[in-house]
Length: 244
Image (tube, rainbow, N blue to C red; front, side, top):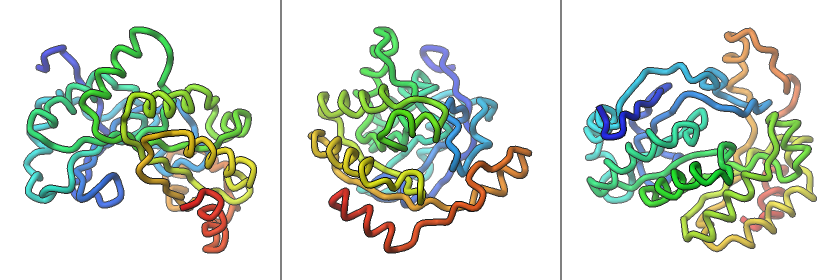
């Protein structure tokens, strides 16, 4: 059992990730998410009902693959929303850092809040996290709520807090034609990014429909049925506005 009796619910493991941080990554997908993104490609991770692990047991499993990472990879925890299991995540990363392994968390930032006790936990997580990969869905508060079911004020506050505390970030934005590609919102995202001091990378993630089958398997109506994937020209336009 872990030192603080923390256990986590894990949805799945990926042993050879190439797009989840620098280098080759072992990716842990945690279960549970409060957001209901209309384009979510992993709706099966919404419920916190995955396999139960202790941080120690999970780290023993993960570090077997260390030879693949060499000097430029590491471990990434994604979801679902990993910040919903912040205590487990922190203990797991503490073990990774003890062994000198690069750590990254892939998050939409929704659990971030100003509650002093939660912020104490977040500050401890920052100490053992090398990179935050922050997915900003929409800059407009109402648009964000329509797209995900929740507002974005706390998410944007998290980006600023990470910058103020010197934590490296990658910013990602899913480009959905007619929904998240409005010029004024892309300009607002560009302005936010330019105001942050620790953003190492900005990425456009083109909307895709590969997850529709999962919605169907869960008997959930897919809300973006008929929305096309972005064209190369639309992606290039968004990248130009963001300056990437």
